[in-house]
Image (cartoon, rainbow, N blue to C red; front, side):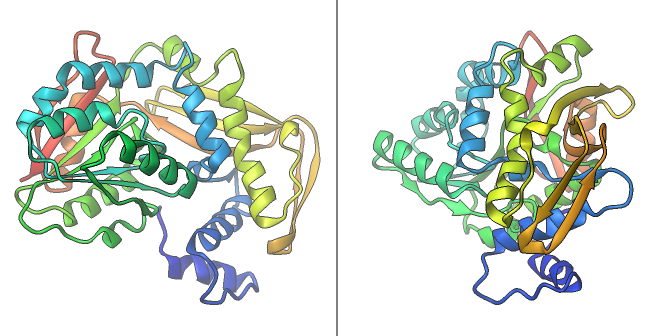
Length: 337
């Protein structure tokens, strides 16, 4: 479950680490997540949000171009062919994109929204300052009359920092099937937090990957070029840099497998031999046996009825479902009910 800054500080305090007020929240969150996940009983785990430093964001952009990774192409195709339809259904005055990254596909949504004559403001939200800076520069040049305000936030825990927009017209978009990285209870909590930021004349748009054949799903997360493997291992490099650790990232193998029961891809790092790790900033020593895993990510796949139920449970009604002829990916627009 997402945690608050106070809870993160408490975890560090319990471990004997006192954090002063000048310590960035992102560092505190990373340190607390590492302590929780790598000292947990049972399988060790780390949240996928820590893949995304500047190098991780670049790797993910590369993943989106891989032949096996159909998600980005499927979503972009829907935005190209149905963007005007979405804009007509909800001509937003403000677009807030959560988990925006470098905003490479955002113009496919911005263009039709700008064409309505209503859009005034774009708010990219992400935990990566470098990705946001790139997005602001690139989009600022392309759309000089559009107000762009980047926000460095963890949208799973800090959504209330957005503040309310008076008068309606806010569209909160979460593309790339990002919600697939959250457990069901986390999705519910997240959508409830989104609902708290929206008024009766606002809306939310989710991009969701749909359940399909196992071979296609597993290939998308096990590309032949090994880019996804490097992306997965990048979380260890982030820990090495930010927390002064000495993980040998190459001593961990990447694996992603389909779990039919939960309808999700599960991604892990598996130690290919014994390893001792020192995380100096946390005064933490770890040992890994050969074959031991770190659970790093889930990628849930959805059905229309599942998405409608998730929306309804958070106080929304599904307003538009766009899946195209292939029915492999969908854009789901909802309004407060």
